[in-house]
Amino acid sequence: MSIRTASELSEEDRRRRRLLLRATGAAGGLCALSAAYPFVASMEPSERAKAAGAPVDAQTSGLDEGELRVIAWRGRPVWILRRSPQMVQQLTQHDSLLADPKSVESVQPDSCRNPNRSIKPEYFVAVGLCTHLGCSPTLRLNAGGAELGANWPGGFFCPCHGSKFDLAGRVFRSVPAPTNLVIPPHHYRTETELVIGDDKS
Image 1 (spheres, one colour):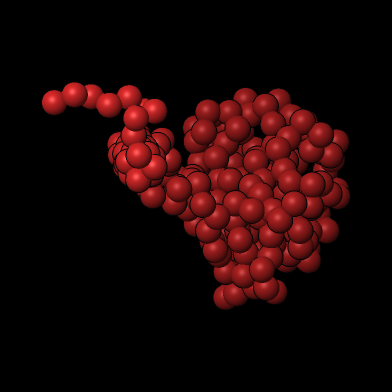
Image 2 (image 1 turned 180 degrees about the horizontal axis):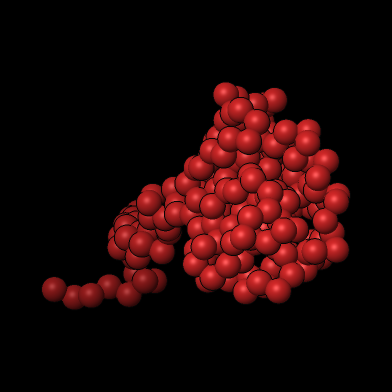
């Protein structure tokens, strides 16, 4: 059987050859794509990882004044504290006792760069972990006391190493915690519904 050169092929044979080459190329491309897909897909974050970093919803409804609600976001506790008008007012009365009263060295979204460190003065939202070693402070609304000192106006106290924060999460001077409590990104979807993990900026 002799092999014909391209010049000896009829127009019909050439057409068939072109069609066969295109079909083979397309099939090869599909095979390459299907073989590559599992590798590309494996680089995507898992559903669990996506969920761990995803924003979470929280409600402020039903919170009494002085009540603290805790929700989980990215594996960390996030506090939502409802402050009374008196609690908000006292935040302006002890700046001289604080290490960073204007929160210059601290982490908070731009919407919370104010003396209350909040979007709405009534509600304080913060990551409930001490900025010293990550312990979880407790809410202490009572002023003064032997353990906390005569000038203590009430706030958050970390019993592990003695760090103290006011009701805006601002750290007092001469304690181990170096900065104010972290305010997570958040915004209000409705009057009572918060979205933690997204500040809409």
